[in-house]
Length: 183
Image 1: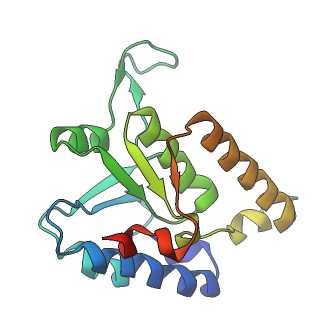
Image 2: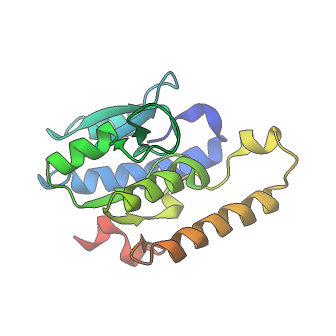
């Protein structure tokens, strides 16, 4: 879910109603789990979302230290080990028999995309509505030499690589196909 400090006000007020609408739609569905993933030491989910997340008996908060909420750690602590320890999120979902994941969150080109990749690599059926996430990370642009157009092109390329590598990824791109409207 979204943390206010990294993006401009217009993006915040564009995204939060989308995400809150999705939460409201599924709050009464017992088969749907609400998983809230926050960076360690980055602050809590915004109140507008948190009030709906916490209405679910199946609400669970996870903390992460990487963009990918499904980040795995080699069992020996080093890089490239064959044995890996699953993420706490992956263990939680698999224990409960969850097979379908809809990812929404803060930055479309960072955490959302990387978490989508992690979920796909862990065998989940994944859907994502990119427009319900922050599309442009303005603080990142201030610290780089890229123009918004260059950053947008890079993010678009990375998403197209992801859809090429995982053809089963369900990209939701218009309001008629959004999960909150189809059930």
